[in-house]
Amino acid sequence: MFGFMGFGEDIGIDLGTATVLVYIKGQGIVIREPSVVAIDKDTNTILAVGEEARRMLGRTPGNIVAIRPLREGVISNYEITEKMLKYFIEKAIGKRSFVKPTIAVCVPSSVTEVERRAVEDATKQAGARQVHIIEEPIAAAIGAGIDISRACGSMVVDIGGGTTDIAVISLGGTVVSTSLKIAGDNFDENIIRYMRKKHNVLIGERTAEDLKIHVGTAYERTTPVSLEVRGRNLITGLPKNITVTSEEMHEALKESVLAICDAVHTVLEKTPPELAADISDRGIVMTGGGSLLYGLDKLIKSRTGINAIIAEDSVSCVAIGTGKYIEFLGEGRGKGKFDIFGKPHNNKSSDFVATKEDEE
Image (cartoon, rainbow, N blue to C red; front, side, top):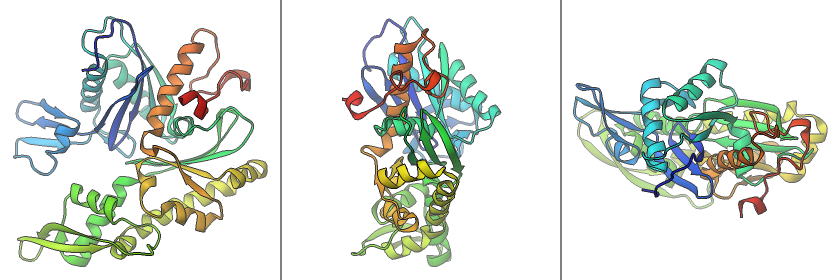
């Protein structure tokens, strides 16, 4: 699909709960597909992966199940994750590549050693020659164009599908961080629960996602919007059309978005004063698909008093950062420049600088 590559490639993978993004050195992001796999339960064979499998969610016969093998940022089904990774790697570099690729994969900052090892082992089994694990906030910061090597505090709030990672970064490393299992998937669950409780209507994951994207609200809108959706009436059992307003979505999502704001506040409280002053001047950088929820940046600003900025191409920041990391790692391979999280040894800022100019 992307041409024949005879040599080992450097690949960065954002192994997200909702979406997998694959970055190839020199090409940028070549794959952006949902983390969904469709399986035939009778034969235990994979029928579809990615976008094709996502279209099957909620629409499969009894013998076919569409599953998401990652939950809350970590592997919940090892075997399926390995097969999904193998599919995406082969799709990106072709089956005929002679040399196995070196792959960098990102993980939430709060993963255990066992969960980290599971990601590493699954990636190796899927065809990697060498695997490097990088924490999501570091990758997000690099992808957002922040120079993480400087002795200057930067705060990143990465809201993905399964987890929200909040970190203060300085000198190429994490100073203070936390990880919440509240993110985009929880927003969908909040909406499904609200529709069931308030309207006695059951909606599916895809409908909930549409509501989140089009009328989802974290901060009161000046001009309310609405969207008509269809679900199943729980009393009659028949399909029902219902118009949902942004005010209702604000109510449905309130608890989750406030929990994210409280976590940001807690991290700021634990941040050393000098770095907190830097963050106050520079603002909080928001990345990940969840950061695009309407008004979430305004809510964080109102709760912390610090300007919140949504990064350019926020959905791709972690993948771009993982790819940039593997590129820098490739340039420094064998020279002892980097440790496993992209932090330059001896903190020499000249060894690791990720800026907007580098991306261009």
